[in-house]
Figure 1 (cartoon, rainbow, N blue to C red):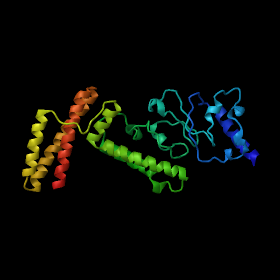
Figure 2 (tube, helix red, strand yellow):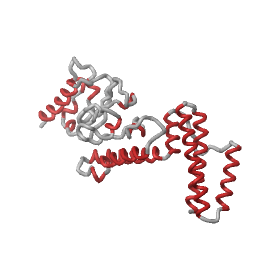
Figure 3 (spheres, one colour):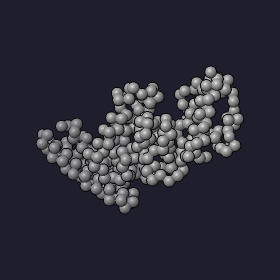
Figure 4 (cartoon, helix red, strand yellow):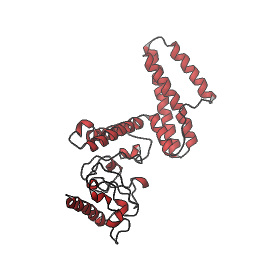
Length: 276
């Protein structure tokens, strides 16, 4: 029995030595199967298994069974520096950020990786203008791969990964599908803090707020409320375009001004929805 376990360790070591992607920046995550190290072999030091030709080999062995994600410092245009990893199951290098949700080679569900932003999840560049149909299609594609009902035949580990990834995809979709939340998210990615509860000091906007509130309060029927709502939605579209223009110019001050307007118009629209 101990000989079989020793051979399994040797196989892991051999694969690691032969990997063309092995670097000193390797990172390891613990796997569930700890059977290898349940024998007296667990008392062996990793240094005793380390060949002279691979001084960093000990760092790539987890305390339990196998290599998890391996970081690669080579240039990778689609991923951030912290997200250049390999599949935990087959060690295939990802072609793009979406592979860190679902491996394209072995079809294994990958663990949650917070370094992948919402735009990367859907294979989109960090841009404000997004086609609704394009986003919805990519969202449905991910749900087909990650929905718990569709991964029931996989291991418990992958089912847990799928649940986490599915929740993140849903949050990403909801964030990017809404013009205001998308604008706020972009600003946060740019390192610009956004206080969604910031008090309004713009006198022009304050006057407009009071006027709209009066109009909503005095509305006597649904038709009038619908007309006000149509005006608000048009204002939302106008200020969405203003935000996009500011973002393209990297004028974050104007971008924040657009967000303040959009925030108010969205809240006013929600109030009308409650009355209808």
